[in-house]
Length: 106
Length: 121
Image (tube, rainbow over all chains, first blue to last red; front, side, top):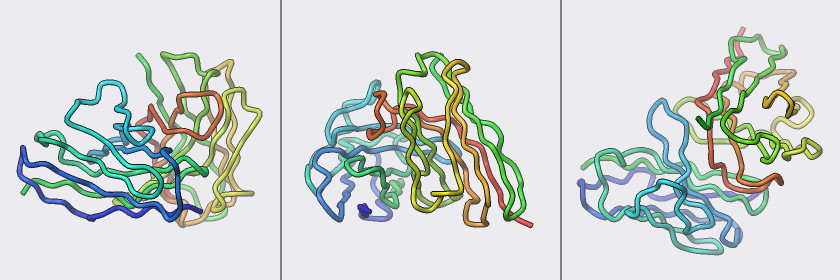
């Protein structure tokens, strides 16, 4: 089983301040990595797939990078609606999710 | 409108059974692999089961292998999860999720709103 580890658990930023979220895999997942956003009481929403490709309708302020074992989700200028929990997921060897990073308003 | 709507959740006793359903609309259902993903309230996401677009290939997480069975009825655009021998640790919100291709093993590009399963005596 591939274990996904996200850091930090909670990230506090001011609106407009760059946010950088990290995800590390216990073994290489190539670029088979997705990022999801989840708001309270809502289902997850796909943001990024293939490590760096934005899903349909996702604003350009969201960007993904990395390959192999280390990945990053960057929100260049977070808006109020971006404060939520973010999960990374590998789909190189079945599926496994990180434990999530909560992005909160500072 | 492209959407997934889950149903069938509820309260069940340990050792009991439950069958979840997910109704798909707005896309050609048989063209896409589907999965069930669960989430304990306040906790992270856990993949449960997946099925190919034609239904010929199914996959289950070790935690549910032998107890849960995923299936689909492409004539009715519906996905199912038969859950048997339920345990307290199966308590969670269950989401159905769509993949972008017929073969399983990709990201989930569409999610339903979920149905809650509570296993308790």
